[in-house]
Length: 290
Ligand code: GLN
Image (cartoon, rainbow, N blue to C red; front, side, top):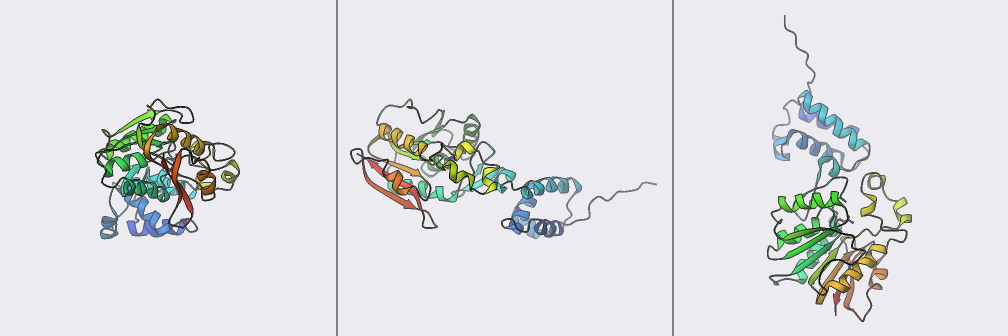
């Protein structure tokens, strides 16, 4: 007589309720439980709601359990799912790339505003990571051409994939290079230098959320003891490479507004100002090359 071992009798709804309870104390437990379900089942949120009484197969349940444990160990959801949304597009991320942050969208928006109506500009993204800045600019303005630089081969691999996925592979050139040294471009050849460089000091890093410290690449966050080492290199590169009237946009820490403006001597720069993020904190440097 055949016999059946029924490994799983949980519906999607039941799995979500249990997972939400186990995730209590972490950020947005119910939403994360739903995201994990959608990810493993390959469905969207609407399908999840519409078919919540369907059973979760034992194979899916095993996968879900693995992902749930990763989340319980503090791993950011973006790494578990392998993606994060930035400026309305989906970016692949992994351990080689910083997870794109909403603050960084301000940089993109400011660049789009500043060059409103300009058909063709040439931009340079220093420390591109997942490529979120360069790929978004190219996707929003198909006539623009850019170069995206990163020292990490792993990050550039992801940035290239993201460029392909967003249909911008022809507009963005990728270069593996250390931007703290002179870059192989003609002087005064870019309209825009944009960067979200590592800017966290060693001291500040020690106090960061463990989810950041234990999982995100330290080299994408900390440039050196002081935190301003890479911002300084970005200013030097921008000074050399921006055309007259070209724009430097650089993200920085909320306490670095004044220090970053001070990196820009009046002899080379004008219209220096500090942009704020949605929380009202100082977040990026805006400066126009003389
Ligand atoms: N430019 C990427 C971002 O904004 C990577 C930044 C970094 O690694 N410091 O997310």
